[in-house]
Image (cartoon, helix red, strand yellow):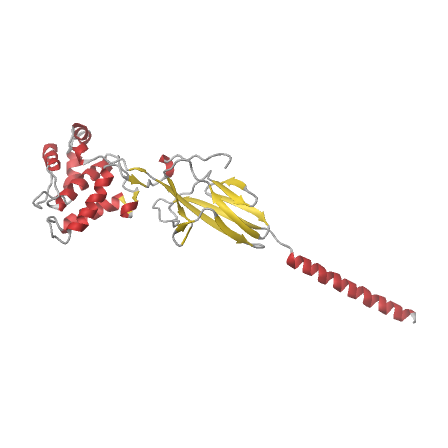
Length: 295
């Protein structure tokens, strides 16, 4: 074999070896697991519907635990990220407060609350989990009885012009008496008598009594009208508007009246709230939360 043939064979062998190494290296790169990450978001669900709205605030300092390896991180401005994850199945568990007035609303699957959430993270993948929570506390409402006793009277008369602003506020509503006549009080004594005589023979009268009491509760800052009442599926302010509209539509709802049942439902909701029923406050400020440590 001449020297030219030897050089050619050597060149071909080198080229084949190089091609083989590139092929093997390429296969290694193609199958190498690249890290993924899980982003966990945490928000305060002020209407307890399990759906994040842009107006709902985030929750910080809430522990989230990733398994494996069992690492716990706290949310900052409602977010924490578990990074550099190799492909595999992970679970994220949100911490449960010691206080029993906190509830989880999201995520859900077929109506069931998920905690922990289990998911698969592949190469280069970023998965996001959104946990929603809300708290409950008493509404702060005072009953019609409070507004007819000396404490309530003093509260109504606490302004520079006495009871005038409160009486004007009550007169702006569609309140009625037992006979279905419009009721527009001009003195506290007149209002007090009307409260004490309230009964459900005419359901519109009893609804009026509880509408008046809750309106005064809001005016006195005992109750936040933006707080959410889960049994009614609405804010307290929306309940007040619905009650006033129902009275405007029908001020005499005796037995058999087709509008009686709807007015009774509104009356029951306002009655419960006037007696301090649990509501979802607009912010979690009034609901402390603590967690067992280590998490």
